[in-house]
Image 1: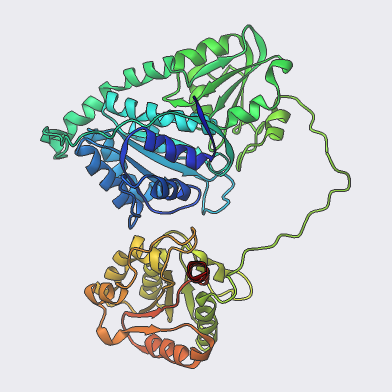
Image 2: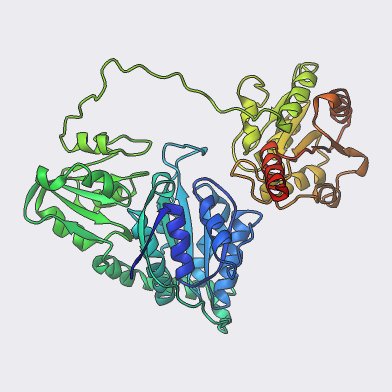
Length: 531
């Protein structure tokens, strides 16, 4: 009997990984990838699944499990790939022992991100196989295939999904789980010790595998043609974009479709497909990676359309409507006299400790004409919006401290950094060490709400350790201050901020109060247990 479950794309990936026999999942929470690890934590007690400090440590730990012969999954959102890049790219040079799948969840249209980079470029750059499922069922099925492919080619496999697939549900047929691999550490040291002499040999081996990877893309069931015979228009549809094409009923339009969900792109299959079409449209959710490659493959004279030509939007998510328009379908307005609904921007929760931090900062900052406050990535980034408007910058994880340092080096005073507890351990500690080593004149506020609040309340790696970390990095003990962000403590908090601004060196203030959401959940749980 076939079992069928209603699953988010993230949950389908997680269950597929469990059923493929993984022994560990390594991740740092980031939308839209977070639910993968959470599902494994809730449904596979025999899989190691504690959150990691950042994506680089996650990638390296997963590679260590692979070295030991077991299957591992590492998950992150697309910008996390930037953090993990050193280990990720070098894992293609070391190769793997147990199967290793790297799951990158991209966020076209930037629903909760600073950019909409396309992780497929990382896979192409590292010269490893890339899988891009078009549905929840395919995401589930691909996990078993990905681990088999990884162990067959002795390479990590990158699986790339997007927000719409990660956070939508569909029925998924599931199989019986297979057993985890036995412990079997690799005994071939030259694979893993990347001294230049070894690395050159390993890199030559990686290059030598490229024809086989290309041959696999030519024959895989995940790259297939839909529709036969010569057609005026052909569509190359990648990943989730295949659904947007099929929703426009290409058969009725007389349009043939070549679905691509495994990379490198199948060059011969694309050439054969193109011969039977007068023109091609490349539909891919993300940047025009495939469009650029197909253009180079077919030559400048072939009529190729896509994001680069303006036939599809250059940025943001694709939709069935924009794909339909590119295929010549006139999209009718469903409603008359459509008026724009005024947006409701996000705001910090009522009762959030970050609110009191920003009230205090705003009060003190007005006393200094040149004050600049450098922000970071987290729910406290909302301090850039009304009613606070307190943050002058927010660039990437950990940038608040190092940007404050650079601004102070240039003469800005006061230069204040605001960073959350989870972000501080993710990538703020090294910036604080730089500031200590240079005795920079900055004030750092580690706004500690005892959780990774922005992504739903996961564990924060540094909880109850921040004073010790700051002291260990060399901050003077008398300039590591802890306050409780509450309105009744406003006089004390503003006084401490002034004192530390006037100190000519590195000071750290830790406003600490539990996230109001996690606290409410905890209280509701306690109440339910008493009933």
